Length: 189
Image (cartoon, rainbow, N blue to C red; front, side):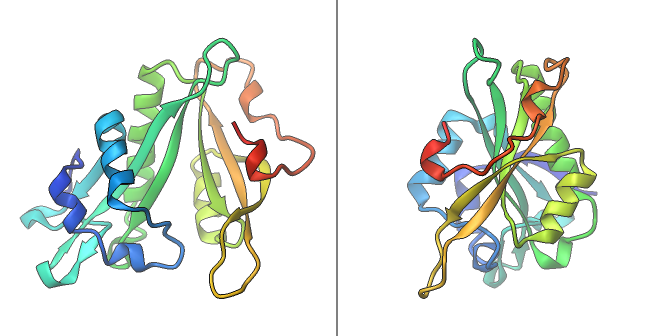
């Protein structure tokens, strides 16, 4: 049986292999610690029986883990208070088991409890597997962000979709009305 639990500092040493996935954004240790300190309720892992973590993995330890990392941000006055999915990653051997959907559901529940209007995330335009999964979970493309992801080795930067799902507080679903034109990263609040 899979156990869902809070991410701990020790997990930072167990998820390196997943960060090698080309579609997974990687961050420095201080970034992860900042999220863990400020938004611990949004930092969740799924652990398999026997302690295997199911999303980030360290093959030398034979541990695999799945994790979602997010935060709450925005302005309540402008109806922009929301949950944000910063990272969602599953080890290849644990994909297509419904783990991503379950952790997204938990992040949405946390955002509901915090009075959010919506949950948003950024995903590479080229990552159609993830885009389609998020659409199946009720997310829609709110806007395209030009050159959001930095490319490596001389390739052009990649655009991102800002995908959103309205929560119950957004009765009129204003937060998910698509913008008619793309934006640049510096235009994002």
